[in-house]
Image 1 (cartoon, helix red, strand yellow):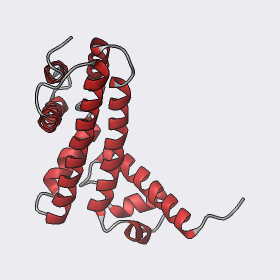
Image 2 (cartoon, helix red, strand yellow):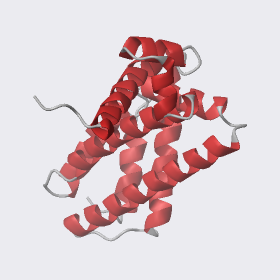
Image 3 (cartoon, one colour):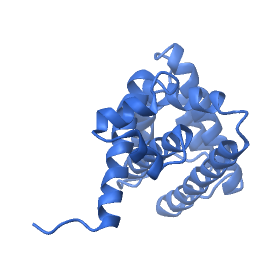
Length: 197
């Protein structure tokens, strides 16, 4: 078996640190998880963490990037699975009921956002990532409208911001009460898609 190059080895270390941090942050929370614990659990020294990330905040950004990427893939797969508008809305509703307000993920997002609110650099990173999520949602909405022969009832950037804001709000409510329904999100998507269905 060939030896890994330095770059491959560093990428493998980074991936393992992110996977370990994801498990610990989601289980124990951001504040309760130390970089030393992440390093030890992953089988590395604390120096390995600092050679890959500027600090705990940047490691958490990488974890949240991975969680969001997984969720966006699940969301895209659900609404682009084929069928008419009703099938797509039903798939979206099933995704939102299963994932909006998922306690560990949502609590980590909220804890990280509130805990880093005074760190200008991390806030800038968070802002850029939220903008990227809105852009992905906007592209998904355009594709969905085209595939289903509908037209958006508002500009796509506003539609994406509306759905994201409503999803975040519902997610936070569902941390406290998981029985809060997400049907209003599906209803809003139906309205965004011109009210057809």
